Length: 218
Image (cartoon, rainbow, N blue to C red; front, side, top):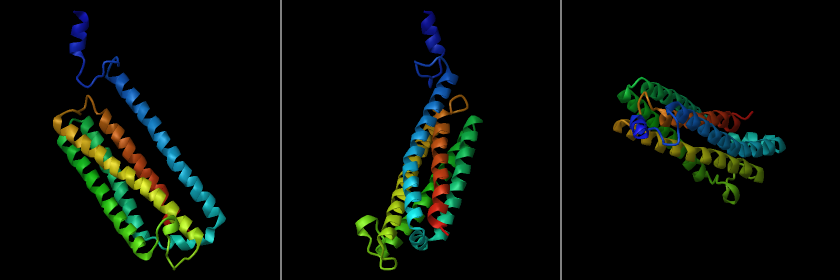
């Protein structure tokens, strides 16, 4: 009987293998940080490849970077920084039980992420029109050199992988909006929203490194 009463007193979000909400929150957050470390390691390999190739051919990397649209890259940087602010405000709103405000902030984050992807689409299509493809598909006459092709291969791998993360983040935030509308997240249980926010901040930070490395070579 005592166990049944104890189970009945547990909040709906508390998994059976946790003692209380605090333990569940700390475990979930720790798990999220471990996942983020693996993400950093994955991108780290691409950053190492970039550094090695750039050290070998700095002049060609400089010329290739001039083919990128710095204004669009800077715009996307501002867009993602703004999205970090809106997701942070969403988390705070959930903590204060301002669910409607949280939903609006998360919707704004998704809209900003969508703006980022639209801008990236125009960047990619402009490059494709010139024959700037990754690897063997590179046919651009402006910089006819294998190392230029290598630069753009790294560019597409880095920005493409980052773009996949943006899309995944959009899906996760949309899921959080649905959960918020159902009342599944609130001041007593905001772990999913906070973990999603951590993932989104990582996406933003990676772009803050990608922008100067790819667009601002001098």
